[in-house]
Image (cartoon, rainbow, N blue to C red):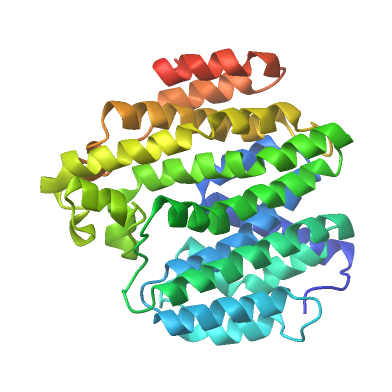
Length: 348
């Protein structure tokens, strides 16, 4: 089971491996980790990789749904301090499904015991903040896999179900981050962060749903756009990535973006309340927030391109401009005006 203590050098080695791994797994999230200082950088990095193990198993179209759910539940047991299941036993269970040439995501899965050892090296409060949220994500993913076991992939039916799914895959991560940061916040700030953690997470995840329609279908056989909205637009979910449906799918994408935009104010409140202690920085979380705002702008201007081109995102130049703008002594009182500017035109 997860727990126990390590000597300093092995713990340092495992932490260093996690920092290297996150660079290969998600360059976007690596930007967040790179913007943090210690000890928060390692806490967030390790927590994210624990989540990524579950996410990789859930996304694997090569694994039959029943086995996916069983693996996710085995992973949850390995995270349970009161269960005897070990990370190595989870590794043994998943070994048969690892690709012959594992990519960065699958490398993290095969090295789950190593990630667990890095987790064990964190302080008890950090472990207490991370563990329940990763477990909630894992069991939530298992429930969705089981729900759509007969469909070959997820086929979200309603906007309410979409937000339920977004909670499990992203809201739990937002909760994880919130609990790590709230430990250093005063009572009012901690309460504000907990109140708006869902908004911060759902904003980012709904933007991902809106922009990734084509890869989600072709690479994972998942359709996250609500079936009720697709039906109103006259689109068969099995043809959501068909170029002939680009305009109609674009209309549904606009509805998802509108839903995401409704969470932007709460996400801003979360950012304004968070403390900058224990290595936390404004840039780490402001950058993904502002890039989501910029992506919503791009999606509003060319929603059909999520199908026609499969690539709607802000430019590299704007990413660099955002990073430059909020790094250092950025005044959070200017966040609202900066958000309005990026919502209307690229920051450059």
